[in-house]
Image (cartoon, rainbow over all chains, first blue to last red; front, side, top):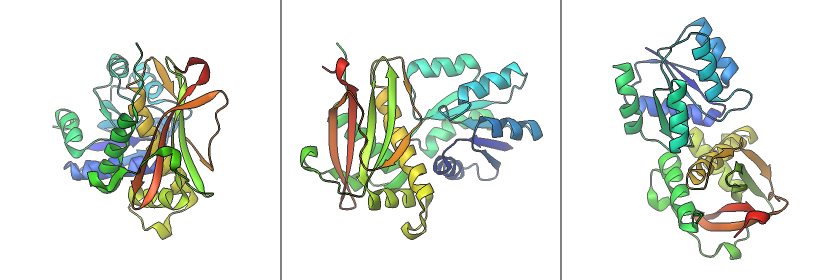
Length: 120
Length: 155
């Protein structure tokens, strides 16, 4: 399985990758993108099995990325990893086609709970 | 009536971020007394996110350059000596973003959270005032967390 981590913060990408390993997903191939445009390039070259994406990014937000992917016909499983997790945002994320929203700060258990149903 | 997160809320949120991603130890970040008495010093660094919408204001994390460097080192799993300005900006910005995002979820909405900004020194926001502030100590140095609100809407 291939997991794409999208976040403009290198520190957060590192933490997400570390947490994926701690949660038991170290066998999966993990690729990274620093913004929405880079993510589109990565997905176009080789679609991942799951996208873990920040919400608030410069240029293209995570929501814009998800909407663009769905409008283009890409149905890749997509989840948000974001510092904002209000009920309105969860509702917005699910309505746009996201499978889950993980709030920062997160634990390996949070990842397992959200990712196991997708990657099983 | 609008609830504005308390200084205790700021402390709990910041401690959760620090414990989860920096220390793994809830006692690593402790109260440091009155925020009014805090002097970060001339080498202060500030991470900041702005809120607009149902609540207009900012959340700021202010600390010394050495605290910012140590926090970056902890986030990146590097030694402090290896940390560059790029890592400090990334780390403090992301910490401000996480604290700000969690504070935002307690404030009236809908609101939009800005991308984080990190500056050397103190940030001055015209027309805004501090409504909540807490001084915390991490590894013997002070971290100041503050919530600002546009004065026109301040209680």
